[in-house]
Length: 418
Image (cartoon, rainbow, N blue to C red; front, top):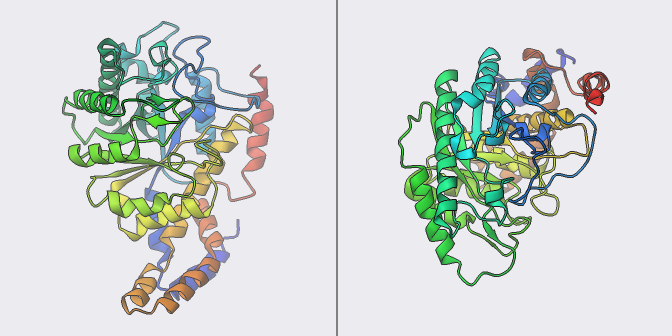
């Protein structure tokens, strides 16, 4: 880390009308919610020997060191936190409760099963977010939950989602920062359905029942998430983008855009200024779909940069919640957290350092030639020096300095988990 490089970088950005100090202050105040399920391959600790039956979830790879308990998972997250600069949040699924070896049905879970997570987060001044788990359960094995044709199955999942909203509210109340409780369901058909309408009508009614109880937005925020297709739902997904866009706008819920849940050629960035004309907020699930929703580790790449540039350009950061959503068991799972989170933060920093005032001035003047030239030349400004300064101020290792710590952790901790 070379602190002497930052003054020159600051001067270079200043010449383009960019205040690096303001960018660093915003970056330091903006958390990325780290998804717990990368640490154990989305298995959870609901019951011994749990498998991922139902729901189109698939993790590949057998790198040593998968967390086997919540204590191991929290230890891994805490280690990763030390390598990720800035504020921290953790995104939990309902299957990660501390159930004490007992079987607790999902419609009976409560804040008491997440008291350990709340105390852990409170001690680290971290926030928590939450998700109902509509997969890896016998009542999800046929691929349907909230839109199920069986009213008793639907009711079970409605009760599960209601319980999860209350858990999210308890987390937000205890930690002083609202938990975003995100609803995603796997419901859909592998082959072409004869009736696309009825499942969506059932889903509307079920969601209305889930959200019927008013909860204080100071403690809990509701989000809904769409998907294009999944394993076992290749031909039809009940909760499509159009469905949830209409639902989020009509019910004023936060809409979740997952980077892997659209066609590979679709621009998620282009959707942001449209949906936020009507929806109250945005939840981003930063991921990387290589061939489909394959949930690879986030890169410092053009699609991720474009999404966060659009958030910053539109002045939407205060209405946006940034989270990670990927799972790769083929590499060190702790390193996957660190790489993805640091890349997400780098993309946000790049967006904050864009010479937006200069670009808009050229655009408003109709000088699109200057706009293009300025946009391209801004790409070679010394972003790296500003990122290193952020790491230094946040007491986190610089690039090329954190990987040895992960290698030691793998040798001393992870490889002992056999």
